[in-house]
Amino acid sequence: MKLEQLLRSLTELEKLKTVDRGLNVGNRKESSAEHSWSCLLIADLIIDFVNEPLDKLKVFEYLIYHDVVEIYAGDAKFNNPEEMKLKRKKEQRALEQISSFIPNTNKFQRIMHEYEERLTRESEFAKAIDCIDSCVRNLNDESASNKDGFTETLIRAKYVPHVSKFVLTQKLFEALMNRLVAQNKV
Image (cartoon, rainbow, N blue to C red; front, side, top):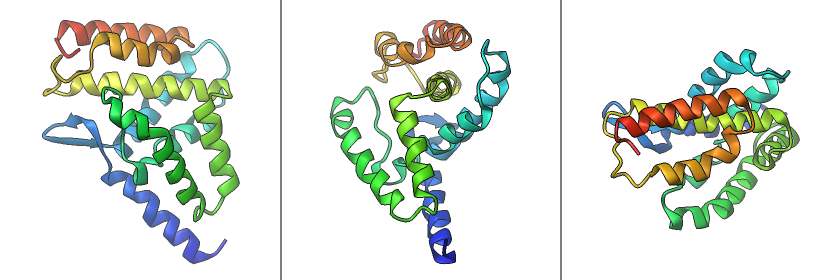
C-alpha cells in the first residue's frame, strides 16, 4: 500500500460526513456518517441480547461500510420511486469508484457483497439494525410527520423482511412503530 493511496482513501471516505439523509437532527439533516455511527451504537447495545452467537466484528464491518457508496451515489429515499429506480446503478458505480482507490479492495468488496446480498447472519443483523436506526431517528425528529410520505404501510413493507429475522429486532421495531403511529409521524 502506498501512502498516497491511504491518504486518498481517508480523505474520500471522510466525505460520508457531508451526505445528507432525509431525517433531521435538530435544525439540520442527519449525515450518513451519523447514521452509520448510530447503527454501530445500537448494534453494540443489543447484540448480546440476540439469542444466537454473532461475530460482533463482522457486524461492525458491515455497519461501518454499508453506506459509504452514498459518498458518490447520494442517499435514496425509499418513498421516492424515481430515486429508488436509479439507486442500484448509482451505488454500483460508486462501489467501483471506491474500489479503485481503497487499500484493501478485496476486503471492501467482500463486505459490501455480503451485506447487500445478506449472505451471513451478521449481515442480516446489520440490515435489521439499519432499519431500527431509521425508526429511532424518525421518532427523535421533531419535524417528522405523517405528511412526509413515509406511511406505516410503506415502512412495514420495507423493514419487516429484515427486522423479522431476529426476535429482538422484531420486538424493537414493533415498539418503535407503535410510538411513531401514536405521535402521528407515520
